[in-house]
Amino acid sequence: MISNVKVQKKSDDKYFIFWLGTEKTTVYLLSGPNKKNIERKIVTTSHSGVEVTVDNYLRPYFLLEDTAQQVVTSTRVVPLEGANNFRDLGGYPTKDGKVTKWGKLFRSDHLHRLTNDDLKVLEEIGIRTIIDYRREDEYKNQPNKTWSSLNNTFHVDPAAERAVLAAKASSTKEKVQHLVDREVDRDVSFDDSGKTMIEQAKDFVRLEDNKRAYRQVLDIALNEKDIPIDQHCRGGKDRTGYGVAIILYLLGVDLSYITQDFMLTKKLRENRNNRRMNQYENETDDPNILSYLYSMLDTRPEYLSSSFEEMIEISGSIDEYFKNELSVTQEEIQKLRKLYVETNNKI
Image: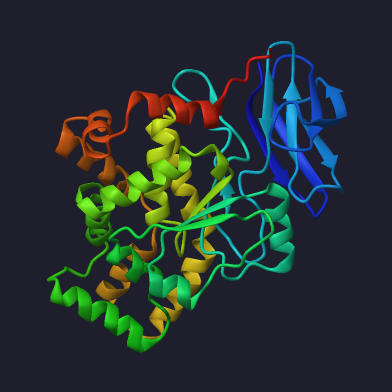
């Protein structure tokens, strides 16, 4: 049985694929994320890893096959020069023994700084649709780059003022002070508790405007013509994190894997956040304010779990929340799973 499959990009054209398995495994290069897109056989091996040279694709997909399974895989993170949090939501196991499809759903930070080489990668992936959670002032000040396969950009604006402030706070003293002044008006305690972001997580669930916004996200995901889709905000953390989480939940992914995906943002943005905190330290030496500012930048499990806990508080269960508050039907859930979930079993 093939399990724990991972792909690492070692250089521009070299990838290392490793997995756990008990029998010989054949590795194929795919021309796309579908199992039928076999371009060539790479190797059949009893080992649990292989280095592959791929010079004709900017982001290749691979198929691993033994006597019982066919497993599609690729790099989780899409390496881009102008975005540090762009990744594929494929390969997550579902509770009924299936997996989310690769190359269909993506999440990222904003796409304002994409390079020409980045655009070639996204054109190869073929992303058709962007769900942009940023407010109008955000996307007008930093408009996304575009590419040939992109057909639609949906501006979905949840009421997420705290997330906007966390994303927009810069290194300048004036903006740091502006952020602090706003929270003083709210009688917020400056500490490392993360209470501000936890309240934001609950707002995603309980505010009527947000219910309508995230229902729109589900409607977009239900339209096969919109696939592949990338969801993003400014940093790809809060607004995007919640939007991704509700789709993965409806696809049948366990909360542990949803949290794992959410927390990958912490790793990918660690260097960026450290640089930002160094800048903050040049503007204030108040440890409480610095702790508070870090809590705004940080990615923590409770920032996501608070959203699901609020669903239970409102409706008694997560499933009932989707049914009662977002009007999600069983037929829609089945359609989502048909679009974005597949089996690894060999047919």
